[in-house]
Length: 403
Ligand SMILES: [Mn+2]
Image 1: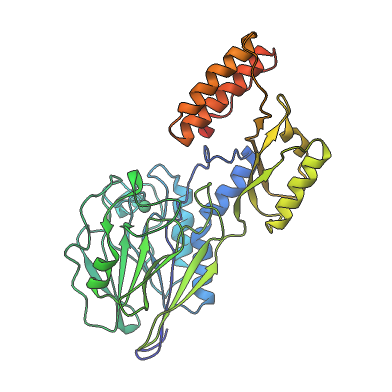
Image 2 (image 1 turned 90 degrees about the horizontal axis):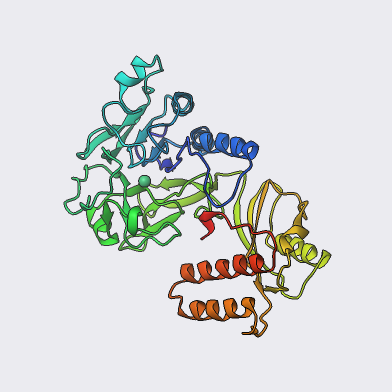
């Protein structure tokens, strides 16, 4: 642990969502792979502590959503507590979010852990259990403090947490933990709808005047520049991809704060797998050519054996073709491949003298009237099902989550 006057090194990570069910994530995991991936999600605390130790970090900051829901099993919580304890004597600071909200009867409640015969929260972990701002010193550093507050419920908060910001302690490295929605955050889990909570603007963050703010709630790595052009805050993002809104590389964030001068950010790979969304146009292809094209596109995308891929077939195919069947077995080694057939039938002029022709003419009108991509998708699915039914073929509706 460095004395005052030496750079302060921190590692931050949030949104572990341990205990996630990993069902209905658009990936269709097999039960066996789901178990593997659940264990990897649940190991986020262990990996974060290992990275913090390797980085020589003075402290680990965790701004919320450690677990996915109150219903997470005790063994999963135990695993997190043991991991955080293993960072001792160095400190961990935790600000509960909207998924792992603090309060009586929750996993932050020492009396609940005691009643269940579970170990207590480790002594090296400081949990912000109050909804009001509090500041604590960083053990071993007289030049650093951490300020934070807890979410007490899963409900979205409309109140702006930085409308009247917490007082900034008079130390060089005044750190802030904040679980909420930066309004200028850009990512697949944007700060609107149900995902928007405890909103704040970049201007409010700048005005609060902290040396560094570790942000939680949104799931992509997203650094924020202050007025001076220096980075002043970041979301590290979720460290373990769980679904199609968590594609691409995942990071823990190492931040070095020199006595003076700009913070130095170093994202550190956090996940052994990458979730990838890949499209392949199979227009005009049949048989082995479909397989070869898919293998080549997967290869060009830099896909690794450990990865999780959703491959969407697009373009036009003859009516009744089943191009996805060409990808069984897999054209290359992957931890998990989900294939979606989004090809559309070759356009042919409907014949109004036939039932199929009249059906297609009617659906064509509906397709033209579709106002959103979702409506369009629904009509396209209806066309595929209707044509198959009229042709006496088997009808397999797509999973609901794809509509
Ligand atoms: Mn959250």
